[in-house]
Amino acid sequence: MIPQFEDIKRAGERLRGVIHPSPLVRSGYFTRLLGAEIFLKLENLQETGAFKVRGAYNRICQLSPEEKQRGIIAASAGNHAQGVAWASARLGINATLIMPEDVSIRKLLSVKEYGAEVILSGSHYNDACSHAIELCREKGKILIPAFDDPHVIAGQGTIGPELADMLGNDVAVVVPVGGGGLISGIALSTKTLCPGVRVIGVQTNSCPSMIRSLAKKTPVTVDIGPTLADGIAVNRPGDLTFPMIQKYVDEMVSVEEEGIAGAVLSLMDKANIIAEGAGATPLAALMDGQISTKAKQYILIISGGNIELNTVDRILERGAVKMGRLIRLEVNLLDIPGSLNRLLGIIANEKANILHIFHDRLDLQNPIEVSSVILNLETRGHDHAREVVDKLRNAGYAVKQAF
Image 1 (tube, rainbow, N blue to C red):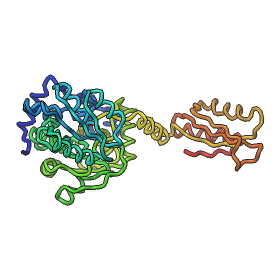
Image 2 (cartoon, one colour):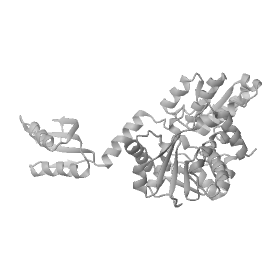
Image 3 (cartoon, helix red, strand yellow):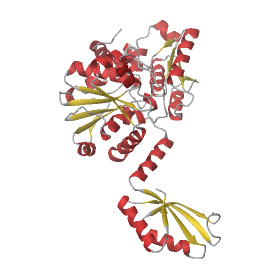
Image 4 (cartoon, rainbow, N blue to C red):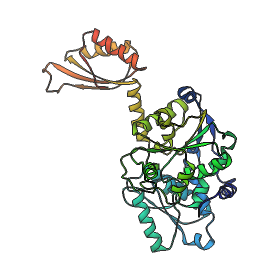
């Protein structure tokens, strides 16, 4: 069954009072940066931190009493599992979630908090999905697909009517794409409401399954590389979503991992928005110039915000290095009283902040009377960083800048 716009309207009725419309906000900073009006649809603010609750609830609430009694099973890398766990807890249904063994700890713990049983299986979503299908056959439970299901697609498509007042011929909606459930629903609903609106999908270069499939004109399987965008790391499009994307989506692009990290950082730094890797891909595509479709207004679907804290820490540090706000210097000093104090005094006078310092007297490459000092410094940017390095060199220090 291919979903129709009427299915999305009915899904909206089921979700009313259960799942609230997410905010749509204009970003002044990204508007100035990109030369077009940029709006952010904040699905990261949904109950479980992602859009997946829409499709999960719409699918599960339509189960018959007998099916609800049997219980449900779903496979997910994280966000669909949270959506299913949340919906099943609300509806009083027993749920088992199959998740990859390397799943995000945050997403795993969130699923358990909703009371669902969790089984870890395989390295990627597709491994977990195979195990879920096998368990359904064994135990007679109902499978809740992550994307390739008309009710799931209709649920995700309820985002479209929430954009109705914004849609027009000069508007493009930019959507992350994994298996294709989100973009299929959004494309169907927005194109029905305004045929002239453009819909653009974004994947990561680490898993361009939809892009490769469109090129081959049939769903194909690709290898999955390491990616920040684990939420869209699906190695094969759905049989239901693929023809919908062929019909309704105007452009598909992919982005590099560094672009995704930069977009996560930019959303945090310039818009105070926490986005996971998948949720940041629409902004990454625009910032990296990957989208050829020109529009006066772009609506970016920030699909989720479930990102690990240690991942945020790495992104912040690497971003700080790129912006010149974090530098590492290596300096050799005579190992005599006062030499380290003199070095640090110059840094203090230049208003650089010392984050870490490592004083090594055991570096065998140096003479015995020389010690090595490694400093991580917080600066105000590239110009300030150069001023600090120049001041040290002018004071007679042989400075090596690691980054």
